[in-house]
Image 1 (cartoon, one colour):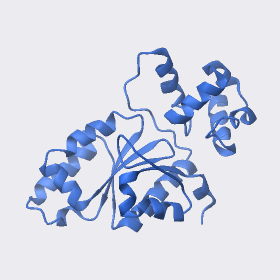
Image 2 (image 1 turned 30 degrees about the vertical axis):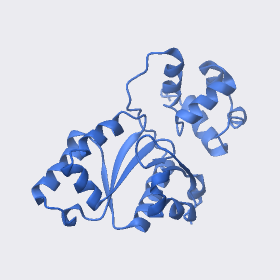
Image 3 (image 1 turned 120 degrees about the vertical axis):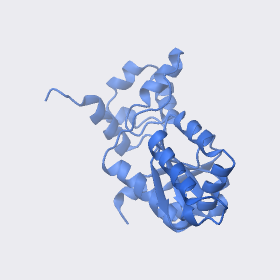
Image 4 (image 1 turned 90 degrees about the vertical axis):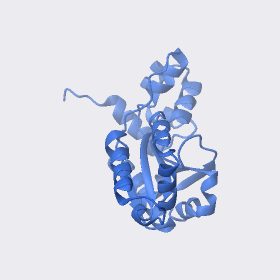
Length: 217
């Protein structure tokens, strides 16, 4: 197993438990927290939000005019949205044309700019989520926040901090609670950052490298 696996953190919506995917993710070495998510089914490394749909769910949400409303809600989150479709949506068994399914897939990926990834079954979905989270860590990928900038000062601070590597809303609030100001956070060293709940050695190092990066060199 890759050493990066034990650094992956995944939040899973409790309604995903019947799929066995949260259990499979744990078996693959991810740190999984099952909770109620307001949007999406999985949040990877506090950066990527994933909506998982079976092939039948995808087509059904299209038929019932729910698909694009769900896309809009995903785009309003502070995470980078992704749609995971389990199975082939062209073979869902629903009375809908292939052209309509293709049009919906194109609309999600092009108009809504939400990447679509496919898997064959639950174990493949779990492996796909692990690979996406691992790549996020390995490539040191910093995804841009997608929500509208808030108006209140306290929420603006949280919004600002979520631009740091692997820092989501929960960790951002923990940073503010611990240090009291953004200025003190920017001056903190790796050891001091590790005193904050949810920040380990690896995450602290990534945050410090990001803050200390000199673009002029």
